[in-house]
Structure formats: structure tokens, C-alpha cells
Amino acid sequence: MLLVHSGYAQRHIKGQNAVSFTAGVVDNFPKFSTPHAPGRGYAGSIDYIWYRKNERYWKTSFNYIRKYYDALTAKKPVVEQYWLAIDYVPRGIYTTRRWLYVAPTAGLYVGYEAVNRNQLDLPEGIIQNQSTASIGPQAGLEGEAYVSPSLALIVGITERFIPFSEVSQFRTTGYIGIRFCFFR
Image (cartoon, rainbow, N blue to C red; front, side, top):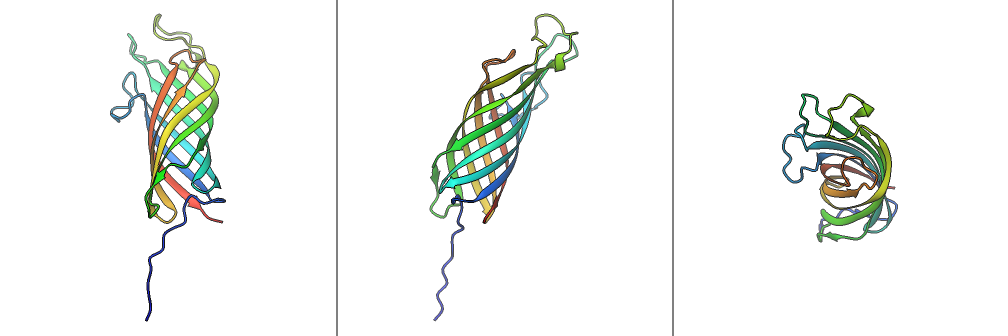
């Protein structure tokens, strides 16, 4: 007699690596409406994940954010941000069969905020045209739903404190994407 038992994929184990690609909205979460409207924007990111212990991982990311602002003229002021970030993701909650994970994230970022690409011909009273470097903390929540043994759909939200920004001290980014896991 032959017994068959369905196996569970080994995910989030020490030594595993992954790569994620995400896209999302800025300061418009959870609406996901017109990203080119004033007060709204969009974001993209590529992440590299490495599992140092089971169910816990480190994530390094490169993020690009673009946000539009309202103006009295036809020309809308724009802010672009380029961030390098590192996050620690502790053990969160997960399902018995390990197909769904939800965990908090906490980390630091360093980067550059370009305001209107330093153009000097802006109307008065909007925002400044100075670009600046920045460093600060970030926190968030991330969820993964595995659709195959090594492919997951991810969704999350990140809040950044940007102390040196000429435009806004806080930036909320909601994102969705895919994650490819590599096993050793």
C-alpha cells in the first residue's frame, strides 16, 4: 500500500534569498486613483531579501518616488525621491501551510530628494526648488501570498520620516508586486 502525503514548501528559511519588484502609489493610499493628479504620485522599487534566521529577514531596496503638487500655472511642481533602504522584518504571522505571511518592517533609508529639478522659474508661494539629501527612519507592514513554491505576490505600506525635506516631513507609500525566491 502506498501512502501519499502532500508536502509543504519550505519558505522563509535560513540561507534563502529573494528578489522583489514593486509598484505603488504615494500619499494616496488606499485609493489608488489618478497618480498624476496634484497631491498624488507613484513609486517603484527593487528589493533584495536574505533570510538570516527562519521566518526573519533583511531587505535592501532601491526606491524611486515621483509626486505632483498643485500650482496656479499649467506647470505642476514635481518632487522626485531616490532612496536606498534597509529593513529588518521580524517573525510575523503566517498560515499553517505557509502560503500567507504578514509582518511589520522597520529600517533606515538614505537618499536624495529632487524638487522641480532645481528649476528657478517657479511661481512664488508653491514649494521651493532646492534639492537635498536625506536620511531617516521608516516603518511599515508587508504581506506575502505564495502562488507557487517560489513566487509570491506582495502588498505593503511604508511610512518614512523625512526630516530635511523642503516639501513634506512624512511620506506614505502603498505598493504591490511580485517576489521570486531562490533556494540554495
